[in-house]
Image (cartoon, rainbow, N blue to C red; front, side, top):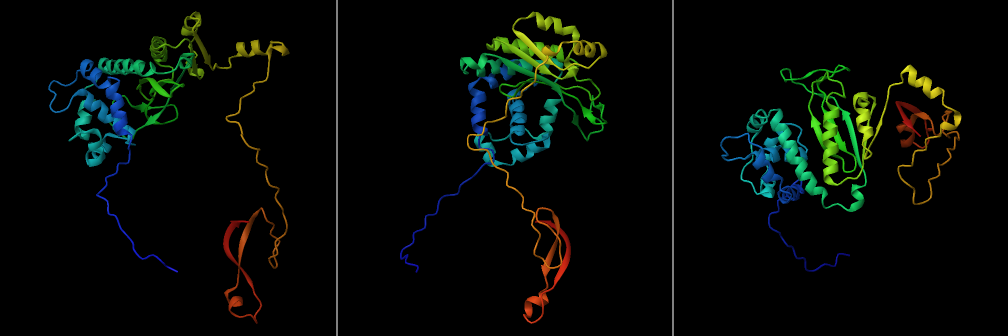
Length: 328
């Protein structure tokens, strides 16, 4: 049956693998877009660049997040990964303690400088998109609660639901799911706190990048009447915000004629390219188990045949309950 007569084995050299293989491509993209040079030119937090520059620290933290890191301590995993270091062409990277010291050097002005550097690089990345990409920019704004286990963290507070931590503001571009503005705030701050200023900056970046129209979206917390007229005056800007059901607005809505209302039809998430699936009909026939009235398709008790009945064909086969429930 086995007819092989000559078998040859080939032993390859030692192969090294990396979990996050795209990290090298991302680093080349950052270098091609000029992000590394811009950070070193405009962000000045270190007096002596030995051996690291500001861009090394910023990219080190960013790459840690891209490699599923959740805290600065995860940088130690990157430092001990030889394949990760070889993919970036680095002999060493900052350790968690050094990275934490770098983060503490930031103030409000340096954070805004870093955001401006990222915006300049963002414009260069958008320049390679087709013309229909710039038809409309959809900007979403929302606040998210970030809990922390720390006890001496500056700015942390108790949120409305009892969460102890922070309440950052996130302004994102729905077209590409990228974050345009990110502002960390105390946990007890409302969602709209400082949102108008950050949205104005995001809108300016979108117009500078070539977008012809902007649509802003948010929940009821972002319906700030002090800014709605100003946004509405620009024909390029439209917004969809929720609004609280105050009594005067409810009265106005109830006074509208019936023809002013129409049914909101939501488009399907996807279209079925084949035939829709037919749900099978459930046959509820009684089971043939002796002495049971259990029907199929319901939660039933599991029965087993007696071991004694299997050993001896002369003895009748009995049934006993194992005490567990199962689906039949």
